[in-house]
Length: 139
Image 1 (cartoon, rainbow, N blue to C red):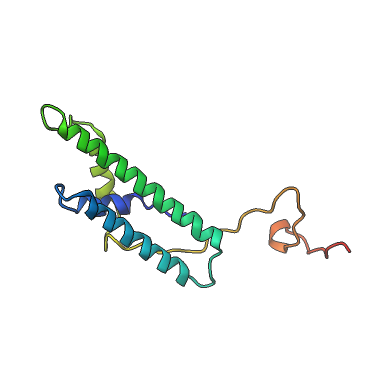
Image 2: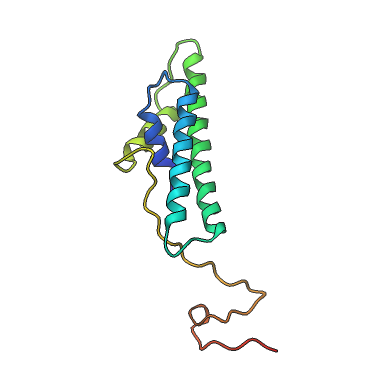
């Protein structure tokens, strides 16, 4: 599963700090659209559960970035007008500078994840899962 936080944080950091929340929401929507397009184009096709897992990972990154943006807004509205040094805004800036280069709305290249291990309550008939020759199912 990809870590989308640095990518989203960097894209948001590139926006005008005085831009309304609508510009952040538009960026998130572009990222969602790009992710879905990329995941649907992977060959061999990904399962719906793999696509959902990646979408949830992106949504978690969006929630984290939005939480940090709300924290910065609260700190900026306090008397004194600025965030103290060492605040969560510093963490946001560090993450955004570590992010990969490229188009902020682009999604990192996707590779097919390792298959999920077989459930313990069901035998596996896959040679790769057990390291043995496959056994036919019982009648």
